[in-house]
Length: 355
Figure (cartoon, rainbow, N blue to C red):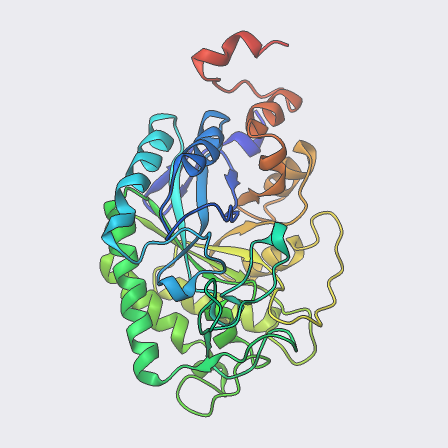
């Protein structure tokens, strides 16, 4: 059988194959509350054979949402519907995960199908954004408020509280969103972090916010996995780069992080990305080859053959796919057919297995 459908232990969790649903924002919540859209959206991937499903960026504070349609986990009232979602995922043989996030200077934005424009703090749909430094993402955006050290310390506590709620809700993978230009990434990169205190300047200072969050989250975790999604490079001169990502990954391994989910970009509007099939794979492979971390790769991996080859060549441990799962929620079942791998189908769907 193709190694793409081999099991793998990540920390204390056994995954039944190497195909994982990448976090994908749905912009369909109200006041951070999940609803039946999220249940069906995430549940279909479990039915379709995904080993694990990482829920969209879920805000640790109301102000940390990208838009007012983002999911949230800043209040206990968010837990009940999330419990329903995780129970369904588990009942159908997959592992539920959640991506804990804060959008920082990229918050207070409109839904993508309505233009993505950033709302003013005085707009009824908007709020004041925060960041390590008062540097806007786009020239026309509203300047974020620089976080004080006291405010940073509160955010670290809020990541811990969000983790506690996530575990109560039944998630078995906790992923911290330190990529795509959101708040943690904003601290990592010198292009968005011009601080001159203990959270800025040197590499050790710029990673401090993430390191302190990891330590706080680890205090809440028992048997759950801790994953970190990073942008391996900013695709911009003098920004965060692969060598810093390797150094960070080595440190995160010593702190007990179970997997590095390797993406790239999103920090600055002037990024220059060379987009092509599997364009982010070399970053994941470099981290895998130069550290002891388990590594996931993402980015335009479209075919069963491509995914299987990555696993067979040990270029990454997991394949995380987003848009491919939106196009085909039963992607693992169909990849298995293509690779002549005989894997179980849901009994309700077995009549279609031989088509």
